[in-house]
Image 1: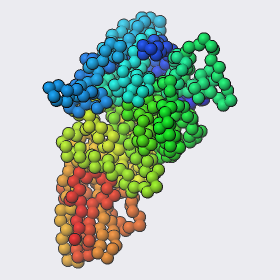
Image 2: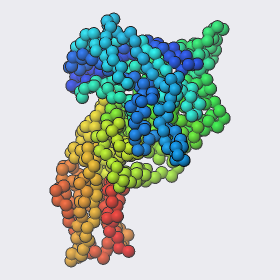
Image 3: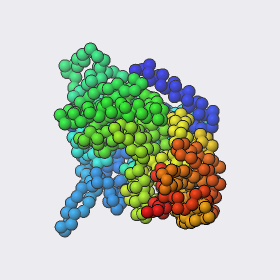
Image 4: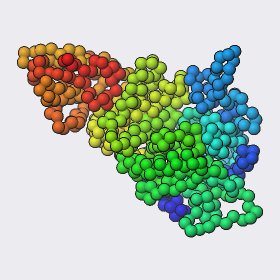
Length: 624
C-alpha cells in the first residue's frame, strides 16, 4: 500500500508540473494528523502538521482555516439561516406546537453544551514560531509570523480540541439510523487560495472547496469500533475488522482498549471517516482491480438490501470509467453514516435503511462525485451546478443503462422540473453563490437539474459524439485541478469547433429562457411556407421534423449564426436539409418545404426533447 501511495503521488506531481508550465497553478497542502477520540464524551484531541506550498505569484501574509464544527452552535450563521430561510431543510428542523400551530424550529437553536460542535485551536506555530490567530465563527484567521513568498513552502503546526455535535447536517453523532460517528469536515482545514484570491467562506450548510494535498492520519479509538473513510489503511493486519489480509488472524493485546488506525490518502482535498461498533464490512472487487468497501449496519434487512446493490455499483463504476475516465485510486468506500448522501474523498457517507432502489440511486450519485468534484475539483460553493449537475447527468445515464427497458430520453424529468422552476418566478442565475439562494428548492433545481441540462442540452447543440468526447477530454485535461465554468465551455469548443460563449453566458449567468414557436404555416403554390419565431431571449440552433401524410419524414436544420457551426445529422436515417443560418437579432425566420400544405401531417421543433424550450405548446403544428 505504501508503494501504491508513492506511485500515485509521483504520477500526480508530474501532472501538476506539466500544468504549471502551461501557466496554471494551484496551492498544495500535505497534512499529518494524530487524533484520539473519546467515545463517551464525543470529544477528541489532535495534533496537526501542515506543509503548505505557495505556488502562486502572491506573497501571503495571512492564511485562513475552516472550523466547520463551530457551525453547530446556537446563534451561528447556520442556525440563523435555518431560522430565516422560507423553506428550511427538513433534516435541520424540528416541529413544535405554539398556540395550536405547528412551526418549524432550528435543531441547532436548542443544542445543549454537551451536544454542540466545536473546534478549538491552540499552540499555532509557523516553522516553530508562534503566529497570531483569531477565531471568527467557522473561520480561523492567521496572521503569519513571516510572509510566505511565491514558490516557497512553510510548515504550520497546531493542536486542536473538538466535540462531535449531535448530527444535524452531514457530520455528527448518533444520527437517525443509529450510526455513532460521522466525521466529515472534522479537522482544521486550510482554505483555498487561487487566482480569485481566498475562499474563506463561512459554513452555512452548503458545499465545500479545498486544497489538493496528501493526508497521513492516525486515529486512536476504542477497539470495538470499525472505521471506514478516505485513504488506504496502512496497518490492516494490526486492525482486523475485515481489512486484514486473507488467512491472517489479528490478536489484540489483552490489556489494549484502543486501536490506532493509520490511513494515507494521496492527492485529495479532504479526509473523512465514520465509525460504529455494529458495522458489517464487505469488500467487493470493482473495475480495474479497485476495492469497493461497503460498511453498513449489521441488521438483517439492511444487510439484505445493501448486498443486492453491491454488484450493481460495480457496473455503475465501470460505466463511469468508460464514459468519463478511469477512477485513479485503488479503493472506494460506501458507508452508511450520514443524512441523505454526501461526497467525500474516496468515499461517501449516506443513508442506508431504504429500499435497494433508493440505496442504489444515492450511492450511484455520490460515486459520480468522485469524478465531478473529487477529481475535477470545481468550486462547488460558487458553482454548485458544475459538480451536482454533471454528476446528475452521468448518474441518469448509468441508471438508465441498468434498466431492462431503457428510456429514449433519460433526462425528461429534469426538463420538467426546470420548467416548473421558471414558472415559479423563483429562479436565480447559476452564478449565484450556493449560500445566497433565497430558498432551498430553487438552489437544488438550479444546481442538480439545470446543471445536468447544461450537458444534456449540449447533445442538442453540438451532437452526442461531440459531447461524449468533450466530457472525456475535460476529465483528462483537468483531473486533479480546479476547473472553472469557462474550462468546460472551452473544452466543448475545442472538441466541436463551435463557438459557445453565448451558451455559457445565457444559460448560467442570466435568467434568459429558450422559447421558439411555429408562428405560421401557409400554402405557397405547390410549396409550403413556414414561419418560426424566437420568443425567449436565449438563442438556439433549430432542429425541425416534418411528418407527411404518406408516412415519410424529413428534417431541417437551422444553424445559429453566432455558433459558426453545423451540427452532424443526429438522425442519419432521415434526410436532412441544412438551411441558411438564423441570427439572434431577427425575431422571425421563414423557409419553404417543397411539398404542398395538404401533404403535411405534423411539424415539430426539436423532436428529441433535449432543447429546454420553456413553452412546449407552440412547438408543434399538427393537422387533426
